[in-house]
Image (tube, rainbow, N blue to C red):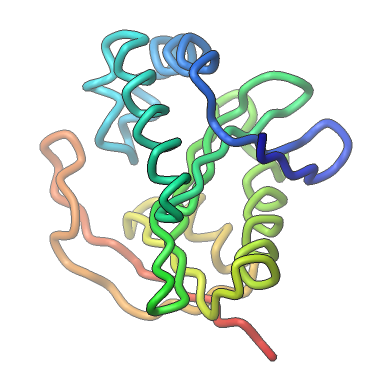
Length: 177
């Protein structure tokens, strides 16, 4: 199974079916919090939702289209981080992530993101990493800026977040040779 050790106590592991119940428990307990910046939590009504997501993710991974990992912090599911898409023609990956509310501010996303960026550039030979975040999602935007991403632009009316139309800030990080 695909795993990357970020540091002692923090690793990224390819999603697997046994995680469905753990994801469901997190979302059940933190649905309102996660729904502020994610569209899908309101649809995650049972473990089957996550089993379907995991099966699709594994299929896309096998096809080289994406890489969806759980962030494991001290052997517990902390959240998710992924190459939502891997575009081999453009040599570009698009990254997305979410983290449990109780683990915010510990550097888990920044450290995990740094590891995936390195993996994209060195192992997948990508030339660009891209992240889109809602304009008002200051926490995600700060992560991008802290890691050296450049704001490439704002896409207006980019997403319907549970009835609220939001703009996206698009960040890019190019590989340096």
